[in-house]
Length: 284
Image (cartoon, rainbow, N blue to C red; front, side, top):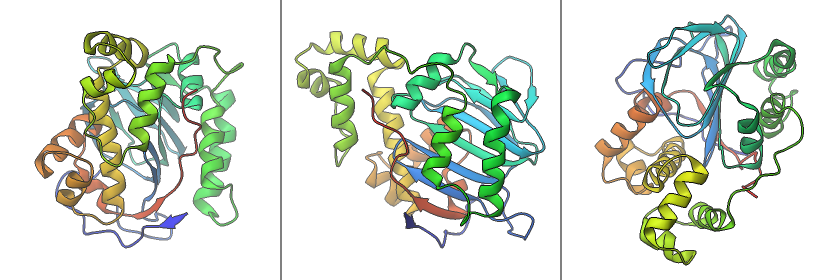
């Protein structure tokens, strides 16, 4: 695991992850991989409506947070799971806990998504306690606790009832997703993706949205954003991160970040950063 410590000075914008380290309230710890992340922190402040392609899990080891779908009522609890691409608002209300973003196309993500029957699910108490015990150990005794990749898998699989789903992505979509993950840049067009799997652009666009639930161009924007997060964690400026992840400029990255996360990218410029290999298996 590579330590990406020494964060830059926080930028302007409403704080979400509460800074100012003390013995009782350490700085946020970010564990990032391309496609997702885990952040462990005390948090507060309302995040306005936003949507992103990751499955979102929030687990509070003390206190309780609140969440709502756009236009819905606030719901309070110790744990929430949000389906991909669901617009929602969130307020951690000062709780200490972990926010986890899971790639929905990964094997574990597909398994978790297959058991979610609501856009926002309150984590069942019967499955929540094991995760909270491991997270508490991770907060209090990180060198003695479960490895972070094992912890991430443990928390996701705690909510994966039954056997993994037998349904798999279409092999043509999987081939394109593999090319995207392996690419040094993220400039793949819809036309090029379609040509890779010998389909017309219209046919591939339809297949891709049918399989993943969002248009190809929107998916590419999401992948650029997850790559930009890694670049910021490596102590890049917003402008350098935009260039590294094929955004037009820093303003484009900032707008996209706010649209998908409800907060500015400067929130990543506080705390300790660690880059890890993805804890999840790629799509089958």
